[in-house]
Length: 387
Ligand SMILES: Cc1cc2nc3c(=O)[nH]c(=O)nc-3n(C[C@H](O)[C@H](O)[C@H](O)COP(=O)(O)OP(=O)(O)OC[C@H]3O[C@@H](n4cnc5c(N)ncnc54)[C@H](O)[C@@H]3O)c2cc1C
Image (cartoon, rainbow, N blue to C red; front, side, top):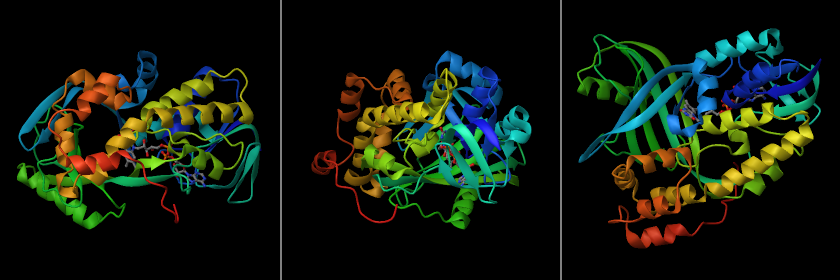
């Protein structure tokens, strides 16, 4: 089989690239290979209005399941509504859009085992040749950073009565702080449906699904909600980089194969969100006059290194969160942050903090012990061992 562009992995990043290529470069033969039986996995991908420019928001609009004009946060002693849009894309929507756009050129239920700049070998032995190959198979098994984890389990539930929530509850950190910075995240998807996630910024990625489901049930019950049905479940453990070496990532990846998404390190260091970077990369790829692996590799590698360098301050904050604060006290850093002005909060999520913003985040009565904060400024060497 031959393709102009072969996308390996049908997740968020390659999914957006496929949609952009079909919309702007219909002459190209785009083939996408996905190991699972459906595209996009089981995710709800959210983003803030300011994370994307107006043109990107416009082309993503058909994928958006719900939008809200703001969101709430709750900490002990702080309840706040942050204005500014918040939007969610469901993986079912991406799956539908991609299936429509690619038809039989989306090969499902078949993984790729050997991915090269000029093609790939699939698990069933088929060979696909392509001028441009983009590897979007999710996090690579490469040791390039020391990380904490944002781990979570979410249940999309239908309630017996209306929940009455007007806006997402991005963080309810008034829950017991067990095992790290813990909060409940709620998206009110319909009058009686909501995605309720139990999230923890923890030192290890291990999830205990049964316990988390119980916690979510207890949280809902405490609010007076009766869960009539669980519609769906999603979970994840996203690495939150504390320090690392982006060069080591690229050295560990196959030479000359362009990557996309989290595989290329294109995600927000503190939140783990990757949708804004995925949308930006899709635009850049689709705008290339000639698409071939060598040029796409140079583009992605450049963007990845630039993005990693620009995220240094966020990795510093992560080190303070994970190393300077005791696990049960980590919430204080976020409570301090959420007292800051709205425009700064928006720039934080967009990864575009100014020098003054950084000073404001670090100023005031320190939410973590000063000596430990000072020690956490210095990055540590990479921990050896399996990724
Ligand atoms: C449950 C969850 C919720 C998240 N919520 C948000 C959010 O709200 N906002 C946000 O911006 N980010 C969010 N993230 C973080 C991040 O944006 C996602 O992980 C995102 O899906 C990463 O996109 P990606 O395309 O790099 O990888 P993925 O979307 O994980 O896609 C990788 C794809 O490659 C496929 N694959 C793997 N190996 C092979 C193989 N050998 N051959 C073929 N296919 C293969 C996988 O099956 C998968 O479909 C969330 C993550 C998770 C886990």
